[in-house]
Structure formats: C-alpha cells, structure tokens
Length: 325
Ligand SMILES: Cc1cc2nc3c(=O)[nH]c(=O)nc-3n(C[C@H](O)[C@H](O)[C@H](O)COP(=O)(O)OP(=O)(O)OC[C@H]3O[C@@H](n4cnc5c(N)ncnc54)[C@H](O)[C@@H]3O)c2cc1C
Image 1 (cartoon, rainbow, N blue to C red):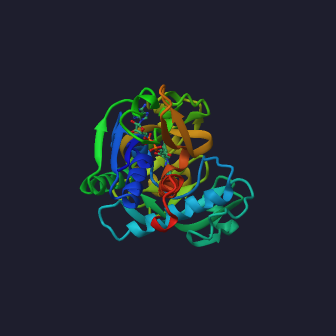
Image 2 (tube, protein in one colour):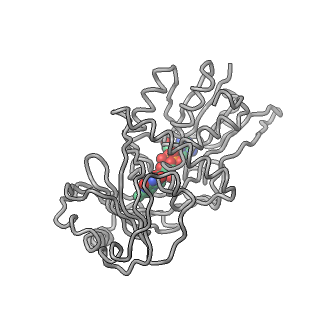
Image 3 (tube, rainbow, N blue to C red):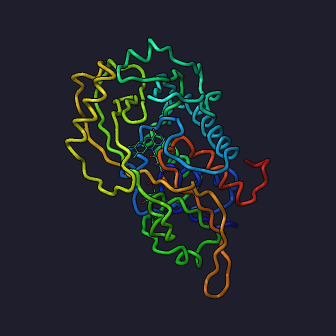
C-alpha cells in the first residue's frame, strides 16, 4: 500500500490530498503542515476564478488546469457548504487588451462599450463583463478537510526542514508548501507578491470590479477590497496609509462602496514563481533508496484559479491510469 505525505494544508495541499485519495482509495495519505486554515495565504484570497500573476510556459497545460478547476468549482455550487458561487462583474484596463484565452470558459463574456468604461472614470480603454466563479477558500478548505478525514485521511502538525527527513516513513512526497518551498527545497525562484486587502460590509455592491490595480470582489458575508501587488515584499504588517488609499481609489470607481463598514484588514504573500512548479522528481537517501516527489507550488495570484487542475496533474504525474482521474 502506498504511504503518501502531502506537505502543506493550503488550497494546493488539501486538494492534492483529496484528488489522490479519490484515485487511490487504499493509499495511506497524511497531510503534514506547519500552519492550518484559517491562518494561511489561501484564507486571504477572495477566491475569484481569473488567471492573475502566474507564470507557466506550457499554455496548453495551463489551459487544461484552468478548465479543470473551473469545471470542478462549478460542480461545487450545488453543495451549500463548499463555498462556491457564480459572480458577475467588470474587468477593465487602461490599455487595449486582447480577448483572454479563458474567455470561452466564463459565461456571457462581452466587450464593454466606451460609455460603460467611462462610467467608472479612470480613463479605461478596454474591458469586459462576464460571469465567473468564486470559491471562498476558508469554507472550501473546511469542506475538503471534512471529506479527506471522513475517508481515512490523516493530518499532522509539524515543520519539515528537509524532504529527506520524510523518506524513511513515506514512499511518496507531494510538496505543496507555497512560499515555504523557498526554504524547504532551496528554491530561490519563489518569491512573495505582497497583497493588502480590506474586508468590508457593503450590501449595495452587486458586481465585482477589477482594473489590475484596484479591485472589489464579493464573498457571501463581506466584500474584499484591494489591493497591492508588491513584488519581493515580505512585510505582512498592515499599512494604514495603504488601506486608506485602497478604499479611496475603489470608492472613486464604485460609489456604492462609500461609507462601507470596515470589518478587518489583511496582508497575504502570494507565492509567485518564475514558472509554476508542477513536476516530478526522484530523490535518493544516503543508502540510495529512491523516493518520488511531486512538486505543486508557485501559484502566485491564481492558487484558487488553478488548484483542482493542479491536484489532478499531481495524480497524473504519479502515473495513475488516466481512466481513474
Ligand atoms: C490578497 C490576495 C488575494 C488573492 N486572491 C486570489 C483570487 O481571488 N483568486 C486566486 O485564484 N488566487 C488568489 N490569491 C492567491 C492564492 O491565495 C494563492 O495562490 C494560494 O493561496 C496558494 O496556496 P498554497 O496552498 O500553495 O499556499 P498556502 O496557503 O500558503 O499554504 C502553504 C502550506 O504549506 C505549509 N508549509 C510551508 N512550508 C512548510 C514546511 N517547511 N513544513 C511544513 N509545512 C509547510 C504551510 O504551513 C501551509 O499549510 C490571492 C492571494 C492574496 C495574497
């Protein structure tokens, strides 16, 4: 029987564990993580399905990963405790932009007229209206964890210093350590893109809005107002001046936000990598014994957009027959 350890309990870790469990019902699967939800980067995400701040040089595979995730989130909408929902809104830009590769996946994708763009102020030149999916990460991680535990999955707390310390106990390691991969496997291609956001109560806001700098994304109990994308910045303290500017700029674009009650402030570090790492490696211990490692990290600002496609890819990389996927 396979004895598999998944490092990381964020959206990448729990989903990889679940996907493996569904394909290998007899395997022993343990999630091993230093920290758990709701204290993770995954919990800070608004959870919108929209590729953003991610790099991957294989467009066909990336499209498949995006599609698999979109279809999976769509299947979760009917489960009331999974945190999935459809959301409609505006994605605008000050540049002329081509139709994105994912336009055919989302619903009702249409180009905005100049009159609609002018309605936001800000000198926008192009933009689209569409309906996409949102998956509230904290709710989903709790849902996925319940399923994982109910099917015999195990969870353990601990910090892993080196993959080699796991090779005596496990035959397969799935590395979903996000930004932690920088230390864990010495990967200096991984770096943070800091994001600061506010959660506010704004019941008059009915559509999401995003212009690449500022955004306003709806969850069921609050609206996430953002944000920053500070490359290479590790500071997780809330900057009050930044928070004030984020609110001010969003109110200029979405007047319904005016007077919104601030619930909380958050800062998260997006685990960016020069290329998303979803690949297999074999490591050897001092006695020459081989252990399979599948890396699944570096999702940047798209961890919720990619998580299920990546989790399926983990299974595929373990050479489990496609018919089981
Ligand atoms: C402000 C903000 C908004 C965002 N909005 C969106 C959005 O709308 N849509 C979207 O798709 N994405 C969004 N993202 C991106 C998304 O949050 C991330 O891509 C995603 O959460 C990464 O998930 P992860 O599981 O890889 O990492 P994490 O959630 O960081 O989990 C990493 C796990 O690994 C564990 N770990 C690390 N190192 C070790 C170690 N050495 N030993 C043991 N355990 C270890 C940690 O304890 C943790 O359990 C947003 C991010 C931010 C900051």
